[in-house]
Length: 330
Image 1 (cartoon, one colour):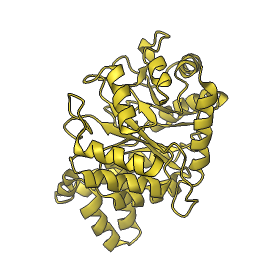
Image 2 (cartoon, helix red, strand yellow):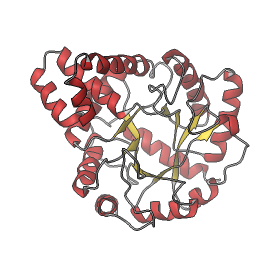
Image 3 (cartoon, one colour):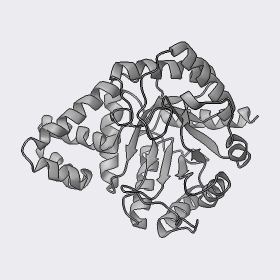
Image 4 (cartoon, rainbow, N blue to C red):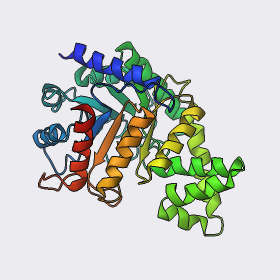
């Protein structure tokens, strides 16, 4: 279909992955790392593609493919590919997007189905599950998840497609960085990160008796997941990010990339507010860090704000997003 174009995009992304930490080359991928997620509950596929093009996105994320209900069809593939957009695809083992995924029982059957999905979507990146370190999204153990990830990466690599984990919860990422500072005696850095990098609910938790232990449990569980990803064949460590402070993003990427031994990507980065300056600052940091994939989560919800109104008109944050891409990539 468009295998050659997809492979070229993938190779550019992979080449950028080797230098996605600070201190690497300053060459920018010609297409840029930015993608977009828009809610299918608000916009149909034609409108989502149109808005993605208007905002200058290169990558496109839709709802995940759910393995138990996979029917061998991709109703969105042709229009997305014809528009010159490239999927950042999530695959989940759950019958409903509202249900937590369970561990895969038949890995051979899993690999066959994943192969069929990848052949249709031809994604630039494929990830397994969503926020897998959160029980409300994945019910298995880290070891069960890693077995699935290894199987997915085996299939993806046979098709020259890079793979990653589903995306570590934003709050889990910041807990890890905060406790790293504390445990290494960097108390001033820990305090500064607490003020800039922790969400208000995390800061309040630290003020309660035993609140730090709750945070440590989250950080310890996340550690059990991410330290196994490189051995499973993952090409990237995928994190989610909703903290407004761009310096905190830089600190988190620096720490986690060294910890996991993998370059960082994010298939979900967004804002809790509607401040255009936050949009621009986070996008600048994405380029500074050389992240090869950064998919903006543009959907209104309890914990996120979209780049566009429900009628499709572009908000000031969306204008900032579009202007940043235009100024850097034309």
